[in-house]
Amino acid sequence: MEISDTIFFLIGFLSEIIGTMAGFGSSTIFLPFASYFVDFKTALVLVAIFHLFGNISRITFFRHGLNKKILLFFGAPSFVLSLVGAVLVGDLPQTILKLILGIFLISISVLFLVKPKLTFPTNKRYLFLGGGISGFIVGLIGTGGALRAAFLTGLKMDKEKYIATAAVIALGTDATRIPTYLNDGFLTEQYYYFIPVLFAIAFVGSFIGRKLVNRIEQGKFKKMVLIAVILASIKFIVDGITFFQT
Image (cartoon, rainbow, N blue to C red; front, side, top):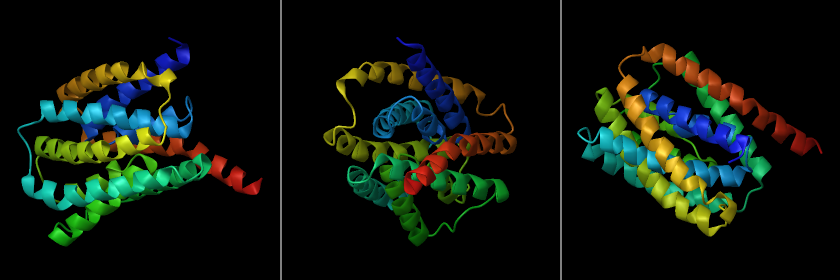
């Protein structure tokens, strides 16, 4: 195993711990960093697989807290639009996708830094709209947990119920988009051995995150996560601007 692969897996491991503790963020953190080690579309499918494993682990550890109403009104449109977003990925250049990702991550991170208590209305219409928008973004650029959190946080669920419900919704979007990524050839044979390693670090990272979830002040912790996301995403903006200037 090369040093770059080891660093790749270490970042994934830390991302899963952070994502479990914050209730979002594993793919938000992992994807921009992963793109420094592999091309964007490979990073997209590897992080999606990792995210799938992480959500299975979170559901296992927090399985007592599920809200079926939210799964229906938020989850169903999220699953469908995630597939639509994933289908579009194959038709867009990687640089364009990275630029879209960078703009989205920086915008959403700044928004939550400025308005940390931002939530959206919790009626059925907004749940349906929020599920569709966040699902489409996840399918297209590989991450939408922060936006999903903004819609779900307004429901004022307790921590474990929120983590479990968000994990099931995220699992559904992963299950719909990953086959499309694979069908489009995003994962080549040289990366097959990454899959069992990603499974192991996702499970262990979720376990550790569960142990730490109530030991750290969440407000300050989420600010640190958002700042890290902004720093990791700046290069995407720079690459995109350079692409259009050439």
